[in-house]
Image (cartoon, rainbow, N blue to C red; front, side, top):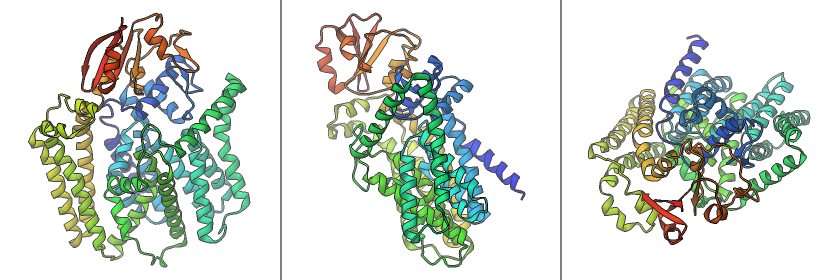
Length: 546
């Protein structure tokens, strides 16, 4: 089959997997709504050079992904589909890139396994249906590592060094200096393992370093030229301070144990993670090209996993850069199990069955818990969680069939591997692709109803109206995005670069003012004479200034 046909098939498959139903649920607070609101405010303010939140300068993230969302909103209008569209496109591009890279470093058969495994693993697939930065950021980091690998085996060393630096620089302009940290640590570990530079020259590193500076320097230079040196100095100070704070402290109550990301990858990257346990050190028959790339992938995997296990803030997608090396290393094992006569280890089989049963039980128990929530509520001490469960979500016992069928189908596919590994693994991947779509389309909207829909419906009721809306006692960006807050100025609204909550609650406001709080904090606001209680729903309580 000609190569262009294969790339065409991968492109069509990616379009079918990632483009439909991106607006099936509202954007989730914080990250999804945060970035989408930055893009919306760029359009409203016509200020495309710097990110803003609530029309105040935003220092937490550089603008590349936000620019991509702006393009999505120009194409499809402001909304969930446009906000998630960039990552859906990146999903298609990623699958194409994996096939190209896999074929380059090993062969077409392994490349095919890599594409299939990445698409069929839970979290790698799921994140292409979201509006968070990480899938795009991870892609550019991977490209930088891939170019660094090619540099060693190509006569065009300067070109690959230049591309490695530029992709690394784009990654920095997408999310921040963590790209430099990961790349630097990985290269240091690689040099230690190889007991030297092993084919890399100082000249190559100089080219990479200077080309990596270009994207961020161009953007920051343009920002300084437009807004002045004071803005550039302020942005860099706040930006770097924020990055350090994420590393050293728990942010937004997102803490966790050291093994947090180990568990996330083990369960979230099913079935890929199980095949890492198939690994064997006997690889002398591999080409030098393949051995070197495998070493890079192992280094990348462990550096990212250990680094973000040390970081105090624990969020699921922080370890998502591991998806590239993890699925590659697993695909290599699939190739050997399929074409080199290797036998699947018992530990791999046990891990596959155990993890499949965990996922199946979760899907099976969701309807059971939803139907019998009254029996569970007395066991929950959090009043907000109890009120969340009061949401009107209709469950039926027949929905348990999805979890049951999933367990049966995955176990059947695993059993098939003993007779014909290739057919069994393809069956497992197809089962995965089906159940992931079912989860996104059927289960996720119901979960969102419990968690945030009541608040978002309240915010949406003010769309197009010139009002103030402020969450009390908790942080949210949904009030800005879903109310489609217009650009208006009032010197009292902001104080020291923050929203002036005291003025909104007690000052002479110039437009209707509304508040929302969580149920555990509502009593103190009900007691305030200037507040009118409007009602409550699913843990959220609504107020209006008298």
